[in-house]
Length: 104
Image (cartoon, rainbow, N blue to C red):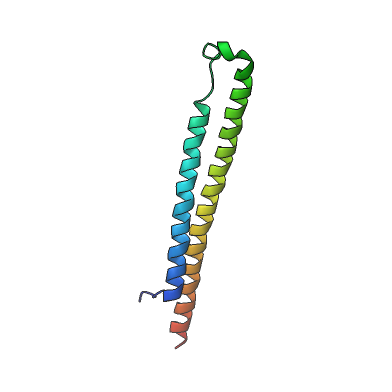
């Protein structure tokens, strides 16, 4: 038959998955910042009046984009790890339940 998950574990698993969803949402926000930062590059024509500042501006845009990409990747990794932990807890609970059921 189907193994029922311990109610306390079920709450924990739901919390892990909810946290994973939150991390995925934050990763999506960081990805949006990457595009926005990359869109702030000044062309030479647009920056003609600010010729001295154009390189500094573009360096800042690159810095923000690079760190947001790193953050987005890290947040996605956290979400994946949380989901993998939830699956591992479920598998262990299922294994224990089946072992106990088969013992009697």
